Length: 114
Length: 113
Image 1 (tube, each protein chain N blue to C red):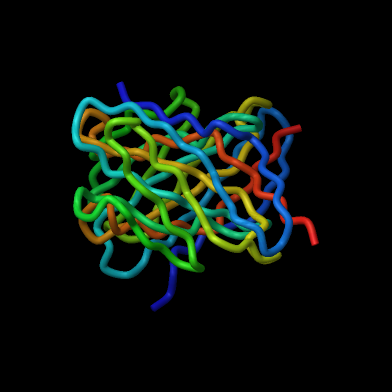
Image 2 (image 1 turned 90 degrees about the vertical axis):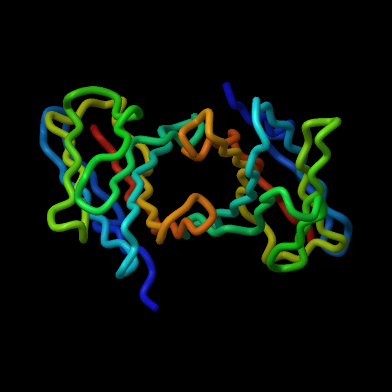
């Protein structure tokens, strides 16, 4: 069965420093992987998606993620954090075993210190 | 293009009452999904419509939950009677044809007291 583990419930970084949000997944098949973001009082917004093309995926707002099959990881990074990045981030997996439902991680709250 | 609209944005009801959540998908999107996040837990799938038909309702927690999608347009999710453990945020999403094209609404925050 598929699962997603987000290794940190909270991550705190200073503005202008790099961001790393960690995600490990399990899947029996070639998965589709996503990162979603939810800003306070807003809906879920797709940041980026991996669909078996390039392993390095670029998303919106300067975020990117690298699919590493050998490590079953899909970590989200950004070179320089901005105050507007403060939000909750979700790693998501989907594959044929889940009937293409989205399987969500528990979320990581990103805190940006001025 | 209008996005996915959910109504109401917040609802506070007493245990035992009935609540109906509504979702208006993006026009032309045949696929409509409901997900929810209860307090402190992961977001979980509830069900999937293709047009007016229920494609997958394996995530519906029990028979107190009833989802409909009349005419393949908007969808409603009724909880009757509501219990305390139903509190959470209910998200709706639509897509034209596959998992890559999900667009989510802003969610309905349901509080059962």
